[in-house]
Length: 114
Image (tube, rainbow, N blue to C red; front, side):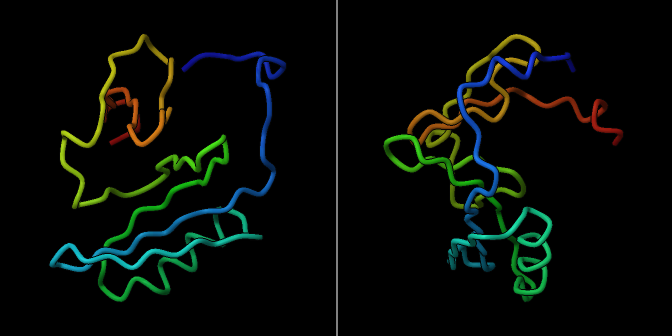
């Protein structure tokens, strides 16, 4: 964890769109885009719609091509080959997506109170 200067950002989106991808036991998926809602409303909607399925929640980031930032859950159909993992220093690039490759940092479960 580190403090930041809020002036270092180039832009922000007050109410992004979200993608919710529901996955059944066979790996099939139903995907939805939700707009004009905050993340709590989207989570409430996803929980009400899940019907025993797992799901992943992404924030949509328009930057040329549409990018997705995973906020919650995992895609059971993604293999390690589809995800690019880059080792970064503490606090650098966590949750960064480049094209269709996620640049992630290994998470320490102890730091999340688990």
